[in-house]
Image 1 (cartoon, rainbow, N blue to C red):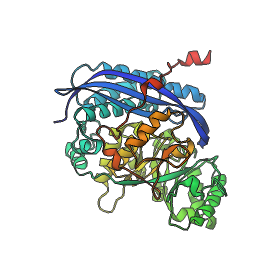
Image 2 (spheres, one colour):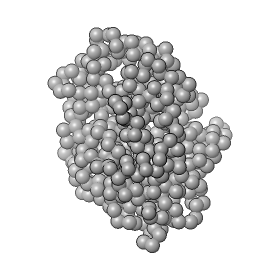
Image 3 (cartoon, rainbow, N blue to C red):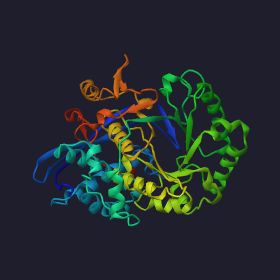
Image 4 (cartoon, helix red, strand yellow):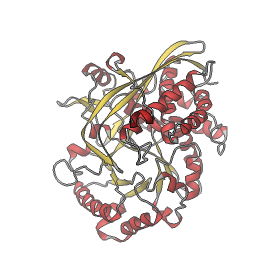
Length: 465
């Protein structure tokens, strides 16, 4: 029987994050954006009160890519998603399991946000961040760590939001998990990143010894092919067996454009290095086009969805269209990741292969990267995109004392090699040992006094005034 809890308070904060280099993906280039922090207080039935926390960047133009909206307007959409979710969660005044809270609010969250012109992917951001903080508080309240707690289904996850699964499917999946002791990083090569020479993709000071690389695509197959050829030549100088994934961030307009790309990958000798090491292609087409476009023969190339993953039925729908995988991002919802990993395990029989990947919207050092890393290690993600150490200088604007507290509590994850405290990468891998701390993968909470309250979201009318 999962423990029940009652919510006492939800508070939101933010901190500016300035990037060390521009991050260009799809049609957007990010140089700075705020990081959200969530603080919740709960009462665990029969055990007293506990405080939990979570964090995530407020990333512009990813959750909502509509061209008529500015980057700032899409960030405000995420703030509105958070405020709507806060109201819905706090309205549940009785004792409930953590998953009861999520399941009882997610439908109303999506519907309320839709009325306010917030798309489903952005709508899910609010519950996703609150759920992580609630789970952290719950694990602290019952004095256990994330891995042991989830094996025992401390959150009370059931199949009410995934009728294609049985209750026993989820219970058996959770009970059988053995978290990975290390997860390989997948180094992102953004569209503005240097390819050749110093600071390029083969520079160990930049790629941190990675054996996996995630290469961003622009949607122009000729330009992408030329750039992939350059990247392949550089990666071949590493002298090790690397693997790559491609991410189009919805930039390929339709199936015909996608056919043009795959034809080049299949037949262009200059692309052989990349094509022979390609694991999958992520979210090639816009999310709306994706839902209307069966892949047909293209499915053999291995495609996954990411931005199109905006509901609990997205993975079964994508499977029917020919997709073989789906991304896990804690900013899209940790419970959905677990449900999708359960599906992938159940479907991967009789030679079929379905999988969940680890993707990252620049999870920053501290809470965000630790909780997302723990989720991936728990569901079996062997390599995950890790952007924060590449695009942001260590802990960024985090106060030194707070960064030092994280490094002291998690010495396998952080180190200071003379340039400040940074993520510590061991032969291309991150270690998960210290994530077994009581709570959701962290012994440390941020310095709440050093954070500013979440900026109040403006209405579209105010923004346009």
